[in-house]
Image 1: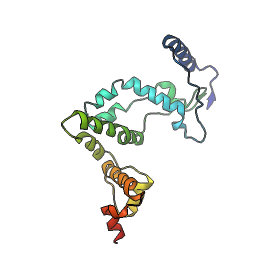
Image 2: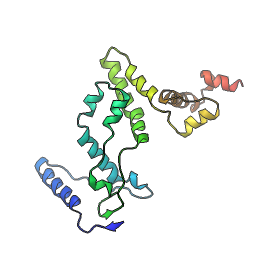
Image 3: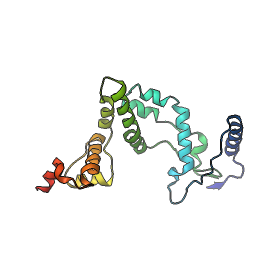
Amino acid sequence: MEENKEDNYYVELQNEYSFLSKKYGLVTIHTQLKFGRMRPMNLAHVKIAQLASFFYNVPHFISKVLELPSTKEVKKMLDFELSDYWSSHYSFEKTFAKRKKSISTAFVNHLFINAIVPFVFFYEKNKTDNGSERALEYLESMPSEQNSIVSKWKSLGIECKNAQSSQALLHLYKHYCKPKRCLQCNIGKKLLLR
């Protein structure tokens, strides 16, 4: 790690923002970013750089997703590199050893399950004759989520093969287990009768 007294990239960004803020009347946001107890890859600077890179590399992402491509094609769209500057930085000012900072597979899966699938499901229900086939195909092609709720189901002998089954178990947990409606749930009844 070395101090970077004159960071040209940072100065260029400031100059560009100054120009664009005057041109479009942008209002400066005065929010303090949080940095404590975070892994370097999760720092706000890296996440903002990834978001900017996403908009640059996949400018028509929504229209492309609305064409209902395969899971593989959507994942390929999300496989991009950050600019060379970010390969040796986690924030401005300090330089670190070079490291690839692409979006992780786990994050892409999380994005699929929590953003793309609901969006495609809604779109298919309202705009196509296929029902919700592609949204369900996306869930079937994604690996099961790994969290404490899915682990509890696993300890009861219920396995998750894919994201579709883990989403179903999360739904059961939220609507039956948590409000203690076990007798209204077929799985709950079977577990209680053991």
